[in-house]
Image 1 (cartoon, rainbow, N blue to C red):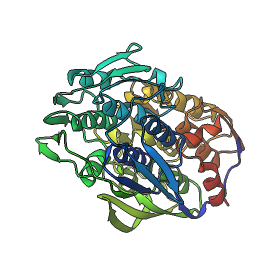
Image 2 (tube, one colour):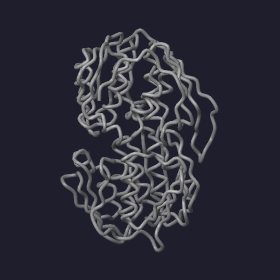
Image 3 (cartoon, rainbow, N blue to C red):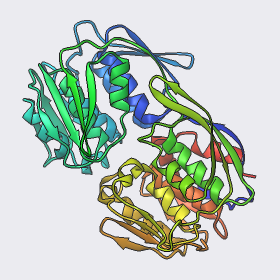
Image 4 (cartoon, rainbow, N blue to C red):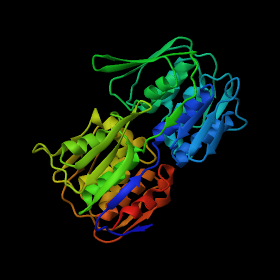
Length: 431
């Protein structure tokens, strides 16, 4: 796909539903009593993978106009007739494994080449401690999960991961007693908020600088009506685009503003970005609002430039590719560190960001756990290989808007993994 530079961005967008919340609404609805109605379910390949796997487990999934109806089978989930395929979705793989660990049957789970490279030992260890028997390909998918009676555990997360936390909490729903997850770095808390909405007995306690999340097993979940806000990670691409492209002003409607997901927005506002939050409100325990974004340059608050590292990095990991693009247009050097997890995404995102920026003529230093990117750089249109990574494809599509000359992106279609309408939305704004 070839993208030309933009003179400005103008207009209003309603973005697709939040992927993280959509995954959870479907899974929780699949194990709850009754019919769960999900409004605004994300129309992405990743979320479709979750629906496909749930259907294989006997969950009835159907659409009624813009509403998804999810109903679990009488008597619990059913043994799947064939291997469950999570596609490119790490969220499906890790969270569904927590549910499968407590089922009285054996199931097998696989995914595409990208998923088969991603680490799964981080869920295998706690699920094994709880009593599940799991065979893997050296800590990666395919996984064979022999579930059954689980025992509760107390587990301290070795890495900051909402997916791992959620996996353990879902398994804890099926254990006899209280399961506790301890995290030293707060991660996105959609699972905790939604489990409470569905009626789970769950508590969150701050102990020093740690969070102790406890869930009681053997309690029934009850169907709900869920309203999914716009995906803030998808919004990040347009936020950064409007900040970079001169004469831009856009409004993004109904964006999820969960405090564990607004790390990028908070950082940008603190450093001079012209972002206004409008109509802030609560929906299903999640904060939602509209965003007005105008062209403006980031200004470092100290003479040492910008630094993104722990603990902030855990809550904007998905936004690092587009933040790296924005860094080239800021007024100071950007240090992104403590982000080793980026090397275990759909691609080694540190390496692919470096490759793309250098192709566009930018200076960038690669670190084992991050990047150093000077500001005030001029980008040149180039041939960019996304390597099939949706966030790399979208990030460099935004970079193309401020480049000198056209940019061609190989594998642009990978955007459909999380945001099928990305390029249509972008075209509506470009003037």
